[in-house]
Image 1 (cartoon, helix red, strand yellow):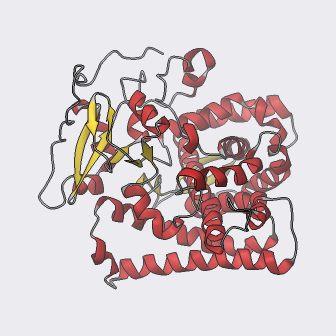
Image 2 (spheres, rainbow, N blue to C red; image 1 turned 90 degrees about the vertical axis):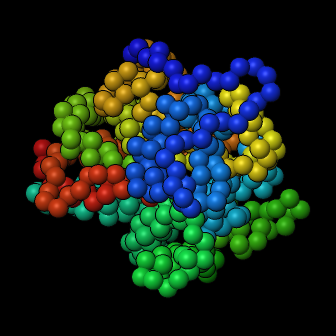
Length: 457
């Protein structure tokens, strides 16, 4: 792969850092929020043509957009930036302030120490039987010619894998559908609140706000039920929920109920939403590129023969894993991220004031023609070792980097690779009437309404 040499507008010369340029297209009152609401993928993808760092207006706020991969890496690794900003403010009513997804500083470090053991590489094989069972249960439910509601199927398996592996208990079975329904409503409404920050107007009891508030209340109730059921059972399996219930704070005291609640939300919500969104995108890829499904099936047959594919086969499924990674590149579930500066700092030769909100888009970074030859083409081969080394650093970081790197990266890759192998080994797909594969813009990115007909091989 040849990386194109086209460069964006030059960075400022050495000297006192100045203000980044302002992006064009702002409108009165809403600023760039209208463009971010109407067509955010195109808007963000075009920002690098105006500079590696540019200023945006979201309502009354100034936001700094970072567009170059090396600068997004510097941003993620620098102690000058914390988890905050429009994205996290919109998520606060869901994730709270005391979960690992939103905490900063010493609290975040302690929480990482609590949850990290559940995702160690030597622990992952313990989840293998559950992942294998759920993968084959998924394809086993699909009948010849059946039209699948891919949204429901994808989130159902994502929730079940997360719940059964990390919060073991049959009590999750009856709640999986409620969790999926609540998340679908919440993640759409939260993006609207991020890019069009109308504050008190979102409290007006119009139907959209009432639906959002009902979904939010139901999800919080579900989490309280899960914690209460575990405590009432008296059981203490070796899982992440037990680790949370036994966790101690910096003073050696049990952590508070609100932190337990927020941590369970952090386990169920981001993981299920992002993995579910990726499963949907993988199914869309297999539908649009049937030759990929054929190659995955051939790889499965070569690796395992006539028996069903299992967790222990994942390491042998390199082409399948490359399909997953390329899907992550072109259709990242986490397509937009924000940070906030803790002090005045400099980025790319520009001054970023203290307390500034900073935004960047993995979607835009990972589709940039400056980093990828044939940047819009689906090419799993670009992740072969000899070609992957040509990808610029930080131009592909689907699980982030530094102390905010997703702790479940290996867990999620194993899960997605196994599911993709089991699905492609059993079925081909075609879109059914009423299917709408266009991107659905929410806090996460996924197909809008994907209806597929499953055709057994």
